[in-house]
Length: 335
Image (cartoon, rainbow, N blue to C red; front, side, top):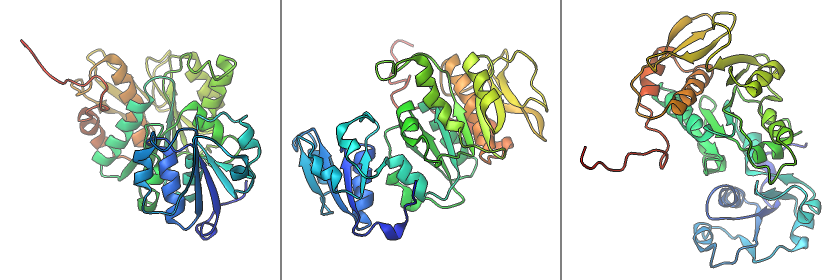
């Protein structure tokens, strides 16, 4: 796949397939238009349904084709950027000379190390917790991806010493297959359960896209996965990166098997290379539920792998407030 450089953008003919009301389409159109590309936005929704996004792009000379797609807009483009929800077998995409996503564009331009998170359950909480922990530990972290914030919204602000935490769906990972762009410093896999089987022909096909998160990792990277689920054990056996396991292990953690586990009182201990055993987080947390403690196991390991001082992780993870609209306390009555 050929490169994409800043000097290529002025005058480039870019078709954005799928504008939507937030996320990748809007950020993609704004990114390319602000860098001098000739942008066409095409969406099956009409202008009234997309009014807020159109208003957000009013500062740039974007061309709109709404309520339909025209084949000519795909055939004549230098580059088509698709929404992850668009199936790869779309006849319009077959007419495109080159297909990207907001994530592939971001990864081509981003110089900062990436922490990537996927899974069926817990990936939003885990990704948000990693970002929170890194920032609390003094490392500037940016959060984007499937969590409804496109990383193209902040691409121009990211510096090499920062960290970028990306939550990635199976569809987003599938769109990156074969590009060689996703080489995360830490790849995190949360709990895998049946999901999206209306899109995939089988569970194996669904999980195959999840496996792409570590496909291009090397021996200097880390893969964080569950120790007590068969999928997690298969991920650990496949990855070319070093492994950090979490959960309830079938054999003790230690220097030759780094990772983390929950203790009977709800706190967590980690065994990290060159550091030995240490506290990962205390028993008192702001987020409720045993599932969130598992999410924080993964988040703490990933934050350490991304450079966080382990001595600052217990306080950082204990202060994590959770994800907005997820098990939030919104009121109290009668105690």
